[in-house]
Image (cartoon, rainbow, N blue to C red; front, side):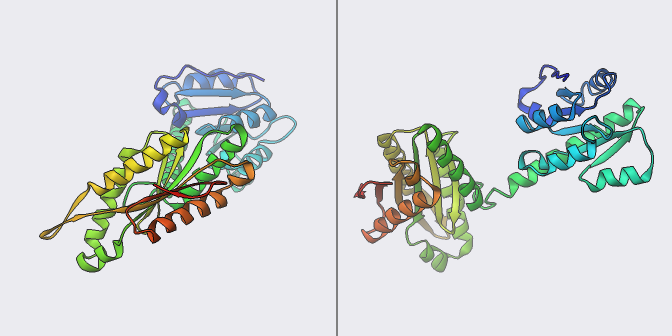
Length: 319
């Protein structure tokens, strides 16, 4: 297997411009490497289909140049294999072929290929097709990112929260990384919508979202869980630090002043905090959500504007 990667010119965007070439013709690799100078920030190479699949799955590229005629398995089989896995499913595949026959081209596109180019190729054509594939991947990534963002607050949406919580739970099971889930609910938010209208209600949610985003660390995950309810997944923090962070968020929301016509609205918020303190079976996503939701309910029942804390095996206590 021939594997090679040029040094990254711009680490921030390198992941968006990585191209993997899978071709058993050794002479193709230096040609494509030179041709993609300035088009791709990183070029990876494999001469065997098995190595190409492994490289793609270990570090998914932004686009793949794939020869149709490969030893041990065809390029069509490689493409089908890559399309079966979530990590490589959305990577555009540009087939390299010596045949101009429409039947083979049709088969390549039908099995998931995004484009094709015939060998020997013109450098300018190769560059254009790779640029198109990279644009396609960027667009796919943007759409996927937007699908996880709540448009009103700019925080993650419920789907993003559930995915992040599942990943955090798995990390806890592997290495017991500290993990907590905080659910926040604005007190009497329905009264705001009823009295001042949904425009003011939306502005309240936007400002609360901004406060939550500013109060979270880079590795925490903040989401709009639904309506006027928010969820924050807190990573790598001891229990006492998590409690302080939760109380700071509630205090920051209390300090918000939102104009509503001639009035100035002040808000309060109730919170339910659960800290992962049990074994792996006690830290699955359903257990964490139920525990945090139950703590939030107790905060509401106890008069609102407060934080209730529990562990996955602990007895709840009020803040």
